[in-house]
Image 1 (tube, each protein chain N blue to C red):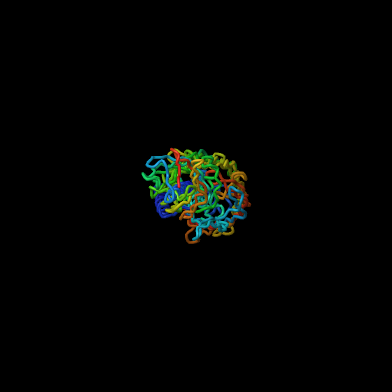
Image 2 (image 1 turned 90 degrees about the horizontal axis):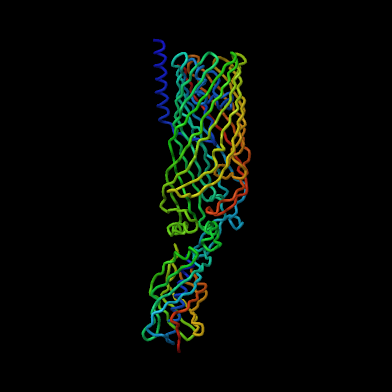
Length: 161
Length: 471
């Protein structure tokens, strides 16, 4: 469960990273609401540092000027019962694109059972070609790690310099 | 008038007996507790309750009360001292030696060794009391306070076998009334009823992470075993009635045979369980993950009601006492207990099974030989030996009840006061030599699937004193 939460945080971090990139890049379509389904893998003390993989879906809205995207919810699910326990915190998280290929997600926090992860910033990678926001091995306070995150926004994002 | 005085003295004795019972703290030792007074322990239960003027007939074979001439009361106190040591190893579900795991200050998961459990035995005081009152030439009345069943094991809370057992205690305390009918000078029949309270207490750790690793509903994750602590303590009790019958036959002036049967007592124990969990385990319990992992298994961190079926097995015994002369009598007994009625220990809560541990006990036999030798008018010495089979099986034995076959060697003596010949004081010492009990068992998935490979070394001794008064 913690792993799931961590995973969620990582995703959020990645999104934040993307949002950060917006300081040097913009996200299109500006002002659009989006969903971003994918998967996340998290390690946390609650999972005894075992990686737990779940499905995750972000929802939010791109800023009117495209400078960032706000992640207002993150829903974790999956066949593994552990995916039911993460609780997202500190929403909304902010995704900023720092370049055409990088970004940050700030304010990422979640809890998994007795583990509290974050808040912190997750660095992420962005690919216009595959419309994928991804992150790997992103540590959060609370001894949590987002070991893998991959989501695809819909409608598709395009990050421009 | 003479009969009235005799009855009056008998009821006085009954009142005294009742007062003693009210102040006694009943605890049991061993598995099935022999229901004898001090003299019976001194002769290793040989001959049952057929020795002359033995008031324990009131429970063990009510028919033998028919051959007791005068009212007699007996109060015994037994002190049991049982040592149990575990020798062996414990492994987690991954086959690794069982260790305790926790996070250090830097957030690293570290392992530390676990103990061997210390002394899993116990000490206990166990009172028994009997009263027999002849009503007339044919009828006699008996009253008994006995502990027919008792077992206890106490392991350290952080020992390597904590996922199998920590504390276990099962005991019954009963009050029985009985009547005998003397058909003629050779034959007597008897019957009685018992109302007994059974108390059960079990505790053990549940390794939630190891259990989660065994559930296909949690993604086949391989969590480390031995993390944290999550102790479940179950306490249940019940009051239930039972019955018993007996026959006593004196084919010669020197021989007495007895046959008795104590019926199975069905016993549904109810109470509650409590969880004593660390923060991580409590969060798991509160999350509903346990039920997700094992549908139907609901463990509440705040505890809930609990129930268990723990029947008292039926038993029967054939006894023979031969009186060689005024000084020397010898007895032998063959006792059978229908332990096969104890198939499993199933704990339930609100209709859901918490755990069902199979035991599949087998019926047992106990054989004993012992006797009395009256050295003087004041002193009587006695001794006996017995062999008692264990109902446990190698395939299902666990540290909760690490029982083995046992041999009893008993010695005893009685002193009758010259100035008050109606009063005698009795003492007995009984040593139990218990066969090493193999403990090679694997836990259920919901208990973490750990494995024990070792043995329990046990020994026990019982010291007993009693006062017997003939009215």
